[in-house]
Length: 279
Ligand SMILES: [Zn+2]
Image 1 (cartoon, rainbow, N blue to C red):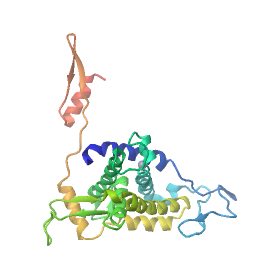
Image 2: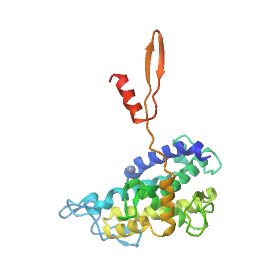
Image 3: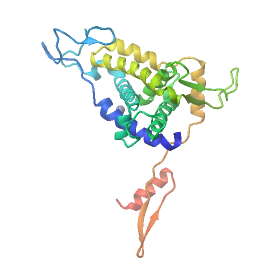
Image 4: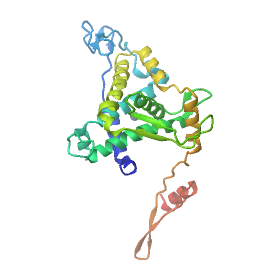
């Protein structure tokens, strides 16, 4: 099921991520001294505190200057959470060509949604590959984001998502294998609300220029601690497959016939393919 649906799930995820994730949200700002793009005298309520918004961007302040080193991964995470939340909307899955728009976890759209959550959980595990235990820093914005989304799945309660290391040897031995187990029947009841709660915080901190709240949240969610994650990281590195090489074939004329010429999937193959294309 996962193998059949993961490409479709990825397409839905990327579509929502770019269009409705990065593409949405309003930053509250004093656009020039004394001029605001929101009712400054009667500020909107902050849904996290239920009190009027206190912070906003000052003139010339931007999201990336304020959030600094945090800004790109934090924003990727916001977009990924939008994708995880809205891929639960069956009318959106229908726009992408899956199902008939009715909420049904057991049709083709339900398969895509399930694959999408499995994929995200798996990506959160694999992300540890780019976490450096020496500096305790993340090397890649999207991967850091996915690790934090896996945390929200694991914290969603009722055994919604677990990382099963049963197959691993006990007592200090290294892990042999892992399985991500995610309860399909709880995606709408547990997974989606957990992601939405996380997204609400990410989004409001960004919109209100609340770098303190944003930093604390994101550092908490992407901190890698404890023996278990160290073992998982070692396993991920051990099982890492070589980077994929995309080699474009060429077509050549042999007499009257068009013949497809393919190349081996190595860097040499890539160069040969380009050289023989005569571009
Ligand atoms: Zn993005």
